[in-house]
Image (cartoon, rainbow, N blue to C red; front, side, top):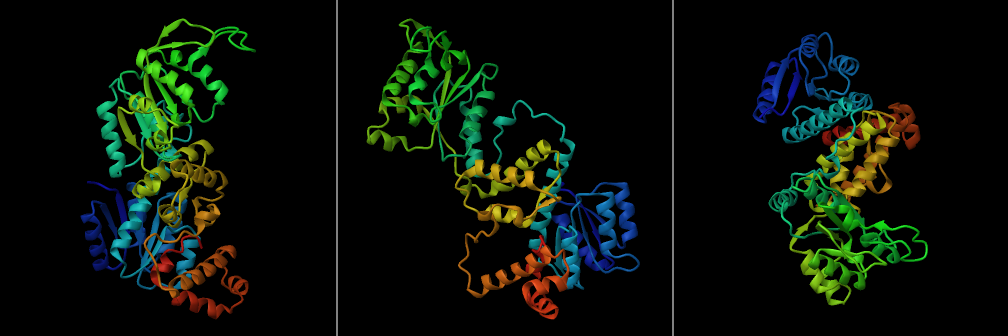
Length: 455
């Protein structure tokens, strides 16, 4: 499987061969170069998805190549790999837009993880650049994004029942994408050419919901100067989606049950029965079985609407899908805003750690905000909402000294970022000497240095 093309530049043949072999085993296509000049020639001849380059090389160094890539091949992620790592070169590389910085010998597992993220983000950016003026497709609203076991299970269920006439109940927390599942069911079915009528039962005032669903005749109530067709009639061979069906009052639940049994409706102000043809899909964020026990939901209606049940998991239970969702939303909003920006690895890592109480809807909102406010080419942690800037690890109860060190390094990085990499200004801002600043950075681990993507 070809996972992408990587250009590796290193004047040490052995180091070049070792890294090439490791990445080839992962499914990458490798281009090798022993110097910057040859690397530039290779870049002219064929596109690459990422570059891993040594820093110190004869004639021209890795920074020369980095400058060339920024000018001639903008967006291609560049990662530095060197045995002569210095704090200053690390700060310079990251400040100027390098994707990552490793010190030899690298943690190869970490390198593979970062490389995969770099290529994924570059691919998303390319899609965005190519599609800036492309209108949204008709099926964009019903795409289910994800490859986690719960999502694959939902897709299997949809494939099995999409053409069935049975009623379907979709359960899940607010913001998980229940309407997306409903739309997917409709547009993948034999009813796809007919209307998909969505009704948000929680958003329509109680005194209006009945007329909204069933319609009314002229003069049925004060202000009814003309008759109106209800949502069940509008569906006409298609699908009616009742979002948050648990919000319906008991009296309306009884009328809905009769419609499902008889497939006829009566408009308000009329006793004439009108035959309707529709498929019902409902959703709820409530526990309807509990609502039945408290007398707030009819048990007979529950069994009518719940022939097939689909449970949509919260985002915190499908963390592996977050990069896919983030890439899709980045693509969408970059096209809309006519921008080409990417997420920093650190920001994506915080996305994975966050609990997302608002689920997919909240993730989409955060990314929209970030893209709209973005001034540069990369969205860093510092450009995210407050609750996403510092997210504790899910699995860590770390010794006290670790977070203190991390906090100290974060302060140093923040000062360097605010001072555009100027060490003297950053030291004064922190209230320490320039020498002390270098000591603090030198004391930090190589891994902490390589994470300093926002400095």
